[in-house]
Image 1: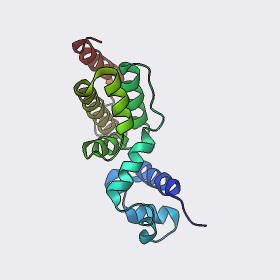
Image 2: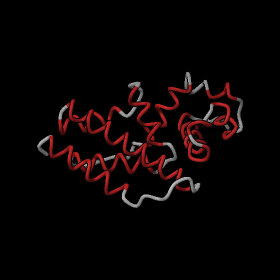
Image 3: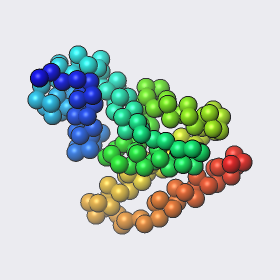
Length: 163
């Protein structure tokens, strides 16, 4: 049976979650689907396009009625997938994905404020994922304050925006 684009994206997310972004190659995604790497190019032109689709899938269910809820939902979505924050932040930086979340946030607070909030959420989520991965292998102690520190920083930014 032929694989569909959603099959390819789902396989790529499984590879990402199992091996991390560094080892999420087209070859490994193809192996996950039991096809040759060239078969993937019937669905996506390159790895960057696949990463954008992965980012869109990671944030697909992100929703919130206000900026705080939207930022928390975005962070939680990225943290659910290994290296999810890096995938989403990279796709956003290259304007390859996650534009729906950015647009919804901009509708709530304006373009500049939305970009500031996104960069904060991306950065904190990436730092949290790095810290949790290092802690999981015993390289550093676990930090129980990561979620609270995110909320404190978000409160500061929103206060500065008058929200």
